[in-house]
Picture 1 (spheres, rainbow, N blue to C red):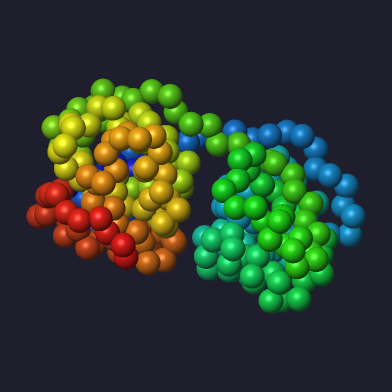
Picture 2: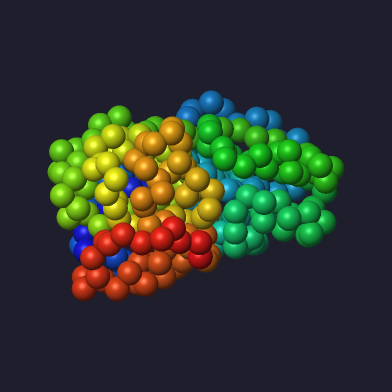
Length: 256
């Protein structure tokens, strides 16, 4: 089965490698590209820690040359991959919430952190971490350090792959990616026909497939949701498809 990988690089190539090891034929089409923002960091007001809701936040700090200034701060990371990236950059200690933004907020609150915390963020954010921590009396200083730009073009090979159903599945790691995907691909899908498998990192990501009435007929996707919002969870979804010997056939909406 050919599986479309929509992640930005360098993560797309890593996911493609993992899919190939499972017997799939990956097709890379990054829908987002990271752009580093250059506005200076705010003044340190006695920060007690650094929060990271994405591995891209750590990468952006490294690209900006801000690591040395911040390395003394303990890091609260959203998940294991982000935590591992922070450790690679020399941060210590680093803790992982092993989940999304809500779990990160819960972890910070449970650890009794009083703040203030510094949050190098994306320009557009799906979870309001500042509001979640503010409700617990923990101040958060947020500074956008990168933005994710969406692609505006649909390659002919991708359009054809969905039209003739030689692409049987797509991996979707963010709601914004899902929204971009359905906008670009939805109008080219065959009406009233099965579109294949949509492997989604979370329920919030899957919701991105339903934007715009009728765009891509979301109910015709066999939507599978990872039990864990990480790469291991996504590869478990792919493994369940059965590799090359299982075609993308019509099915019921997944809820795992």
